[in-house]
Image 1 (tube, rainbow, N blue to C red):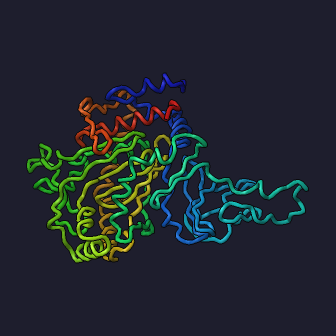
Image 2: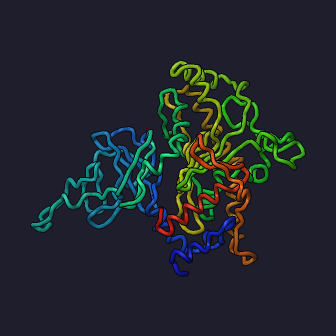
Image 3: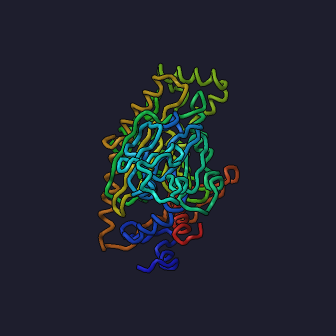
Length: 432
């Protein structure tokens, strides 16, 4: 294919997307360069490296990266590549080390990437300058309430302009912690599916699929199982005959705010009856810390899912963070991080993690359905039965929400997917 802007623009049309954007390896390579190589990507959370020397290793746009806490308590993002012969210097997914030592020739680096020691220095040239051989830092970094983002591009939209509209989604989650902090230290679920990364991104804010993909989670009355600590039942999704969307589900809205970001509102749940020993104690602790009225506001469900384009989402119902890592055009790795609310009773955090095992592990009631759909879509898109993927639901019915400085539509429509492809096209044409 030709990779000019006009060729790419032809693949995105009002209400439809050409199937090549999911199956063409050349387009995938362009995405790695023009989207994941330039956009602000979620890298990790400061709680994952609580003490100096603690590090995690990740891959961003297929680049090996270290996130490490330096001795001055600052967070550093470094390329995981020895400046001598190129070996990874941090071998584990997470560990703690006062120094980073390359296993190949023993070059030793400080936690800020400074080269400290070169064994057998007499082999070095007289002009050799250790200051020129430190681990390379990533070009840009931004942190908001513990969430660490980075851009592999030297220039582009600022972090503040990128994250601005989504600060409220992060606040919604962090404010639930009595101590005002989160910890992503409760393990993780990691799985790989044989499909394109955009299938998972689109699904995050798709309320249309729920009654059908997740039919096994809905009882005879059209109500999902309880998905929060203290709830006796979940959301009403369809009417009892399962042929029409339930009235509460119709009240859900999707919102977009530019840059590919978006979120969905939550359904009205029976919060007056939400009760369990763990939740009641949590509510008491939260109110004690911040006041009863503020606690009531925080515990009233507002957000269901939020997407911070292009690689992470926050779920407000089953609280967790999801990170999307493209591996190949038809292979994607996803990591689910349970969220521990710092200051909440241990039983409340345990209950949240237990429910997440039921809903979003690879073998759970909910996530399994989505993965099956992704694989079937990827397979089906190889068919020559049609060239276009339809994303036209609700086209033309978008309306402004001036209070939220966003655009809204019914959550069962596909406005959020169309917004993602506007951002996709901006990145791919170099105009983002």
